[in-house]
Amino acid sequence: MDTNTVRQAPFGSVLTDCMSIAWFRDGKWSAERLEPTAPLPIHPAAHALHYGSSCFEGFKAYRRANGGIHVFRLDRHIERMRQSARLLVLPEPDAAQVTRMVLALVDRCRPDVPEAPGALYLRPVLFGTVPNIGAAGTPTPEACLVVLASPVWDYFAGGLKPLRIYVELSSRTAPHLGMVKTGGNYAAALGPTLAARRDHRADQVLFCPDGKVQETGAANFLLIRDKHILTRCLDTTFLHGVTRDSALTLARDLGYEVSERIFDVDETLRWIADGEAVLAGTAAVLTGVGTLIHQGREYCVGNGDVGPHTRHLRAALIAIQRGESADKFGWLTPV
Ligand code: PLP
Ligand code: COI
Image 1 (cartoon, rainbow, N blue to C red):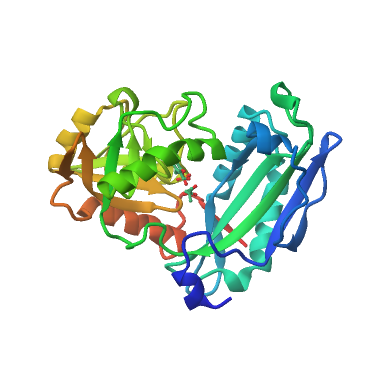
Image 2: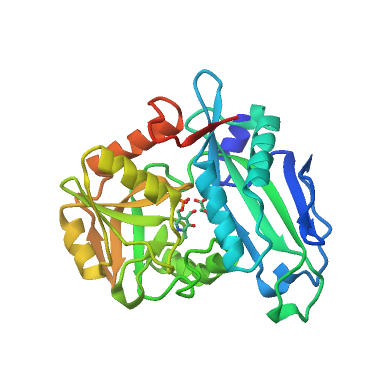
């Protein structure tokens, strides 16, 4: 794989030539196999295509300066995938099997794990395959689990450039499904996201149903001011981000006060007058917000640049991910 060509490519658009795959049939999972990344024989009546029985995960493996490779918070992502599967009544993958699938794939793709600041993005996807268009009210008894891998760099074009975020007062997803990482949630967010991009040159949408701040289309949302972080408390309405959890854990350890509670758009506008706003996600890492767009007005976040707390926390997180500082929370799995 030519690094320069891949580096120019949009996030996730280049896959390694190997994937890991397992099938669920007759009440059990098959042994996993490494196979060439290629189209699968999926029946057009497959449950996932009609009734949306699918979920996925996203996390990264990092290469150290000495060549060692580690996966960041593998167990958390696998647990979230199992939770997504349970909530969608899909066959629940076995944690030990998914771990094996991921580690075998990363091992096979070693040469494709980019050097920092790149990473190998890992994408397990689970979907219902039973060919039955009448099964709207029945869980799929057959499913497929694939782990894909993609060398990636920045998610947002422009790297660390502060983001423009549009405040959207509608929901991203149904209230009980926000914590499920399923494709339908992303499809539901596309309309408002494209409108905000077109009408306001926004990079992302911050969903705030009933004026209460929730999350953006592909990352959680944090406010920071005077060594104090404010973010929404966990509930079923939004994705429980592993990066959010990592940032809060690191921040507490660095002496920040952390408040997890419901807050609204008005309070957000007061915080950003002299504070910082950050998107937290695997793809986004910790990316600073420069502008919030709300009801036809543009609000500068602090002075409009990525703030010092955002830079500090981002650097601390990245240092752990790349093995440049001690893994004091036990977040890394060696490959
Ligand atoms: N919220 C949404 C909607 C996401 O797509 C993501 C990205 O995965 C996140 C939050 C952050 O989750 P994580 O930090 O686990 O990647
Ligand atoms: C991630 O950060 O892993 C995401 O899922 C974001 C994305 C949809 C690329």
